[in-house]
Image (cartoon, rainbow, N blue to C red; front, side, top):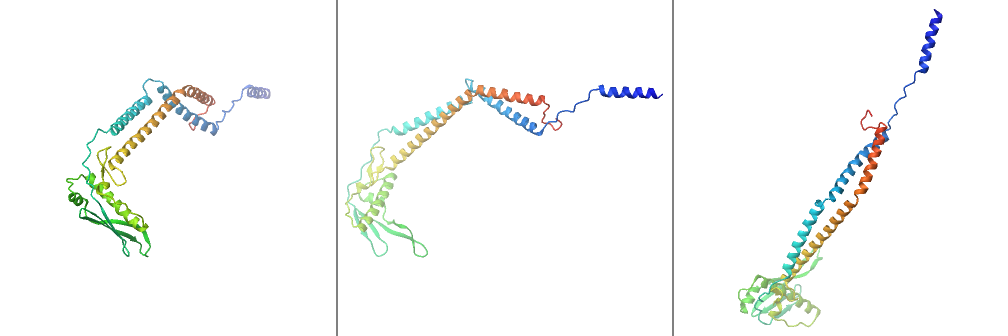
Length: 282
């Protein structure tokens, strides 16, 4: 009875020794999961870049479409600029008569006044000063016309139906004459006699009117429009060059993207073979 028990116990011990022990599974570290997540994200980014690079090799793509749009816009701006610069011959307006302009300046004790008399019509300016509450001057004194109209002057010299451009040019030139006359008197400079036709002269370039400083508002506005068109055209040209360079870069990166994508997928397979998963039970 005792021997039978010992044989059974020895057999159990030998079976326990001969039986291989089960190895525990390799624990997955959190750092490997984070690396796998980054590799998944990188793979999606490379797949998107690969799609763009393959699209860039096609004859028709997003870049060629944008280049056609920019070329059409640039051509349209060029046509507008040429049409603006190629002004057809214009009929010059009838010039103003050469009537003398009498200038009178009264400095006064506090405020100065300036008068221009043309064919019996008097234009009068008064100097206005803006004062602060404590008596300090805020801005330089300015002349403001308080009497007389340019339309009355033109009617007095026999110039009928003046255009709005002529009236605006005459008003600007008259303001300049008044300011120059006041400054000349204060500096005791010699005043040069002027005439009515000096205040507004027909512009041979556009058929408008030039003021006392030989400036034409119509030509200035047209020059500003041409400059704006040129600036916009240059901006579109720079954008077109950038689109073309981006197209070239995307096409040239195709083999690089393919190699990077293969490396990322190999790293993902290596981690997955180790048992790394993004799920909590991996």
